[in-house]
Length: 88
Image 1 (cartoon, rainbow, N blue to C red):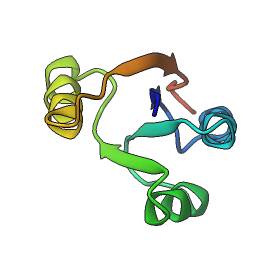
Image 2: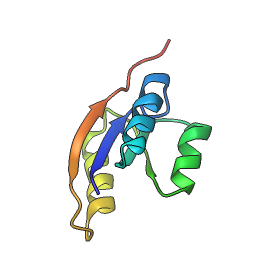
Image 3: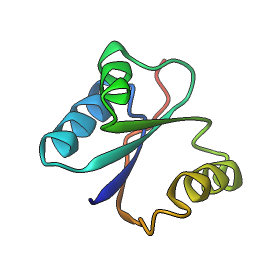
């Protein structure tokens, strides 16, 4: 299975992108900063999305979490999609 990492996955655009990749049969690793979304929570319960809580500016922390989730499964990331941004 192909794995895609999406920053800002709980936002409007990131949520749409996550749904699209899931619909195409990919597993999504979704970076969520503060709160998720009902859609992401449902996809996570179904095993199609893995939620990663963190800050897009914490490269080392994100790397540790990605390594931990992909270790031992011979999985690798096939794509990274950056949808995070400051909403104000």
